[in-house]
Amino acid sequence: MSMQVIEKNQGPKIAYEENGTKVTLEDDELMLNVSKYQRDWPVHIDICNNRDKQLIIGTGEGLYYVAQFDIPAAQYTEPETEEDIPEPIPVNMDDVVLTLWSLDNPVPVIE
Image 1 (cartoon, rainbow, N blue to C red):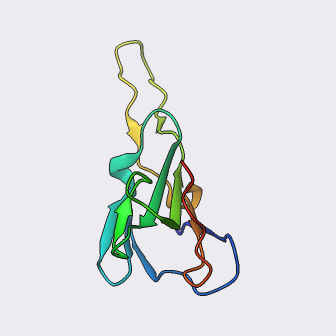
Image 2: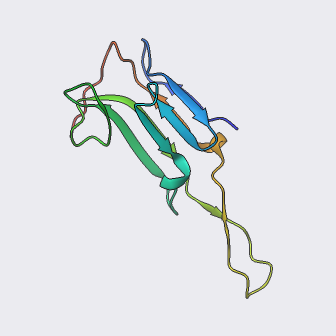
């Protein structure tokens, strides 16, 4: 299983490593466990650089986009009987989209 990766613009991108549902960015600067963020609705997560060029989650203190994660809504098993409770199916990393932005041509966060 591997994420879909989209390169949003030209230029070098942040380094990332995928290990199961964990994605590590920029040599262990930030790690995101995708399965912890999955909900019953699609989830969008922005990863930005702040004024100190540190990676942050969200756009609040972010100046430039570095990456974005789009995580699909959780899916559940079909109950076999009325007494059965639907169980969550583990996130399929093939359905997760990682969008990467250029580090040389930064795109500002506009709130």
